[in-house]
Image 1 (tube, rainbow, N blue to C red):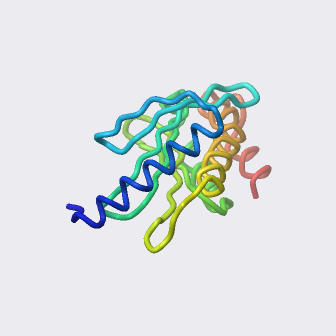
Image 2 (image 1 turned 135 degrees about the vertical axis):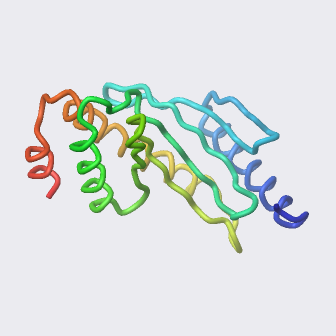
Image 3 (image 1 turned 90 degrees about the vertical axis):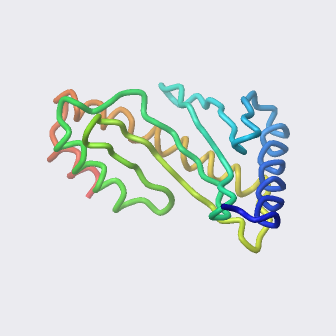
Length: 157
């Protein structure tokens, strides 16, 4: 449980996040009691939903984006593809829930001993949007059997 100082830092970080989104003139939904915002980003062929929240206990800003499908047809291949994608990533990672096929991209940034500003928040959003947009189609095609795991691995070796 966050102490008063941690909570004060978290609230300030949440305000900075909201201010950064306001400067971008983005529409978003606030869940202030959870220090959370929700918004959408349009990619090349995909509307992506994002959640960003401030974790006061761990002094982190966390971003999550769930892919708009569950990989239930070919979870073995998709799980291997997610492992390969994560191996190649510099920032962030995909989580794959083998039980229900949900795939989420997550990225965190620590604000401990630092003040995060527009640049950090913009970086997080841009990395997440580009990564989800880049991998969404291939992971969906892999799950549907339209490409093989070998084709995915060859492209992402």
